[in-house]
Image 1 (cartoon, rainbow, N blue to C red):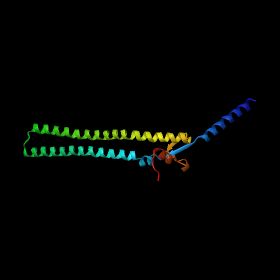
Image 2: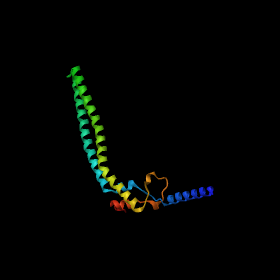
Image 3: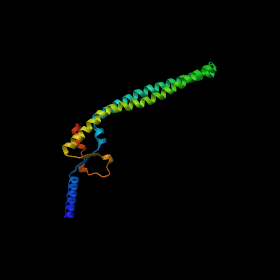
Image 4: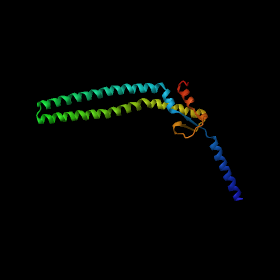
Length: 171
C-alpha cells in the first residue's frame, strides 16, 4: 500500500511538472533591430556625434597649440636664445601641456560615455517597459534577445509586437 501511494504521488508530481513546463510560453526579440529603428536612438546618436566633434575640435586645437609651442621653443634653442635653465623651464611647460592633452582625451572619452548613458537610459527603459507589457499581454514567462539564442522558432518572435507598442512602424 505504501509503495502504491509513493508511486501515485510521484506520478502526480511528474504530471504537474510536465504540465507546468508545457504551459510556459517563451518569446524572443531582436533588440538591435528595435533600437536601430527608434527615432530617439537616431537623435541620441546625432547628439553624441555633435558632442564628439566639438570635443575633438577642442582637442585638436590643444594639439596644434602644443605643436606651435614646441616648434617655437625648438627654434629658440637652435638660435641659442635660451639658457639651459630656460630650456628646462620650457620643457616642463611642454610636458605639462602634453599631460593636459592626454588628460583631456581621457575626460573626453568619459564625458561621451556619461552622455551616452544619460541619453540611452530613458530609451532603454521604454523598450524594457514595452517588452514587459507584451510579456504580460501575451502570457510570456520569458522573452529573450535573439542574440543569445542557439535555436529559435520564428513563430515566437515578438519583435514586431514590441515595435508596435513603441510606435515604430514596421516595413
